[in-house]
Length: 135
Image 1: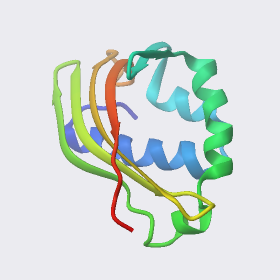
Image 2: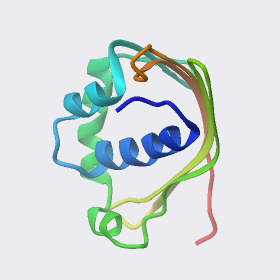
Image 3: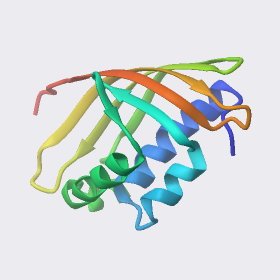
Image 4: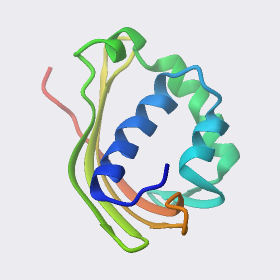
């Protein structure tokens, strides 16, 4: 299940985001599907290793409105651009989700990365910007 095309990259962003936020599947198993074991992930300058990523999933899963996830209310990942060129990937996308307490979380994300030969992610560098949407 590697990333070999723009469609694969868009599918990854949608599926990975949903599974990490809402599934009951072990986060480590989800990471193994998409990332090499020694991946490098930098978000807004913060280096996130495997354990930190797994630890981050617990509060996300507690705070996300799972009923909204199951309905059409959850827009999830809206992919604006996805590019794959050899082992390099890039995407511009918006993450949008409703939280249990009724608030909506929206962020614009600009992501650049490198793939391993098997199509799993070796490195991601991304910048995100929280966006306030009108109620």
